[in-house]
Image 1 (cartoon, rainbow, N blue to C red):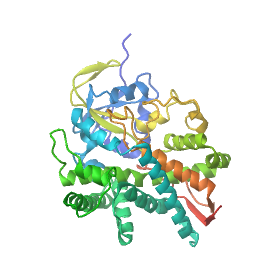
Image 2: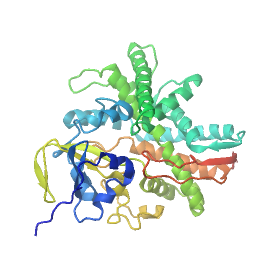
Image 3: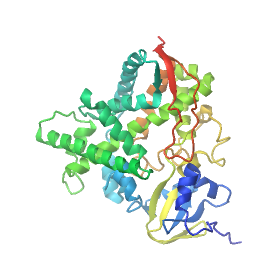
Image 4: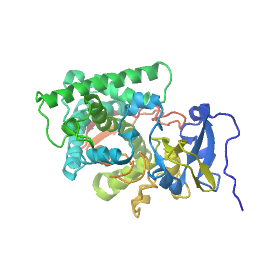
Length: 416
């Protein structure tokens, strides 16, 4: 029996992306037996994928590539043009290994310690403030953390400017109008800032430590043995520090989870295994990346759907993390679901899926987990605070999503 692949009947569904937000793909695909659905975006036929099998297909580099998969508006704000997210084949593997070389156990431990140190510094500052918007403050905290970890000198007078620009790059990629324009300007300023540092490292005028992102990007050579263009090296450094600032959203969401589930707080503070499970559940449960794109490498048929060369394909990141076929009671916050989790590459995909070293999985996943564990451990063990009445709900129509209040705390003090 032939199963007809479901598709939208409307002429174009571009506006539906903004209307449905994170639920754009789930509302179309999860009520069907197949893991593929057809729609049209900007006049182009698009295949939507979901589920574990859909993720496996999306990250199959023999069938999908990243050339021209991301809109220019995203490259000119969030990722940067010609960055690692747009690469394929041996060139991508070579560049990916550069990123993964930064993720040694010692480097990740250092990131954990830098994060903890900055939480202590900010706690002292917050103790004299009437109220603190955790999302706003954690962006600056993480900007300082990211720059120190990457080996980037950051003068006190420029902290707020750099924090603001990195945040605008993140928040403006899906916006329209002035917010999007400012996001592009923020990227331009940030690239110019880091490019100058790259040039100073190469000239020997700026001391840089081997193993730090600023050094490794400055000295990296491509497959032809040529150094990266200074602007390209700057773009890749930003692809190390920008995602760490974006984690501020997970910190705000994690604060919501700790408040709504107070029974988790003692275990997060004292139990290392549970701390990891809690961080993973924050990443699974709360909205972060809605979907990602690729292009079909060549014609083939999958689940009775004819994929055509160069066709755009979108993978349902948020939907996979909330798929009832994968996760039991997916709309309940439950860290213990990760007690027996096997570390699958295609079920927990908040920052993308696939292989770590050769695939397109986000190289920032390990640093994200370290920063979240350091943050949640500090918040539960050392940070005392009250939670005044506020609206910390969030909308799945807004991309990227965030608690409406940014999560406000008051009466901040050292717990121990």
